[in-house]
Length: 375
Image (tube, rainbow, N blue to C red; front, side, top):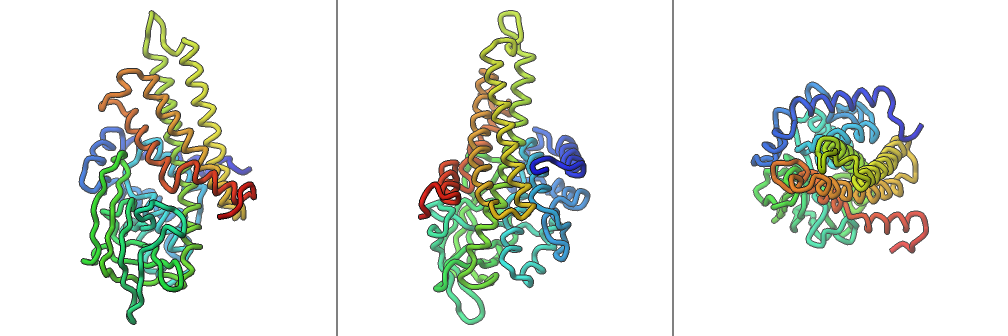
């Protein structure tokens, strides 16, 4: 049944949950988010070597396990619950998906095994100054020079761009939108970390001033791989948002049971009960849409893009609303740096706009189902 986890998937989720409870509690998250790299390399290696989490959705021929969006969704849910800091979304989900979808087996054979093992961190550089997630937003130029391509332009809000080893750059040639692999160590690449609201998910601006790029796939036909990557990434993020909603709801209910006012727990007051009930309804709606989208993608459903848009819109608004309500339910302590509520609120707001906000995805959904004219 779509949207219902199998026993194996539930066991995967339990194992990841136990790992983060042990290795990435709140204190570890705060330490990682304040570090220069923004993540715990020791935990990253453990996730790769002992848990095998990086190769879940990578085909077996390229060193992976050959699973798909459902398993990635399970892992991302636990990451959202734990507020995990690390380049999983950028490397394992975005980079690996886009590279695999480009149909370049030589490039996939070179990089995907290293992504699956955790030895290499990749990212995708797509958005520019207009922060558009659509083809018209791509203006970075790529020019053939006989032995490859040279790239000129700037990409911004690149997830984990400050630590990536290899960058999959979305550029424009005379033939159209194309994909290029760029070594992050190229001296013609300038990486500038961005100050962000959410310190648990780092971003950077990347400037390419004649950087060398290797064409991936067919020149001018790169957007299909980008579109596929966006669908998978949106579904993964929606599942991560579900984990965040579950955590803030748990925090709110627990606090409502423990905090007393006027001689009784605040959870006994009708207004508090209503807020918690509304959060539960939002959680169940988000969980249903996120898991349905992941299942549809695993089944190869041709309507998966519409479901991805639906899940991103529903889960983004639900997470932001629930994270805000959590701060309010906690009262004064919810606004303090020491309490984790603000960390989830910041993750919720940054995730809401990542890959496009709810209004962007509602418009895409309307176009896909014929309610709005295609632009």
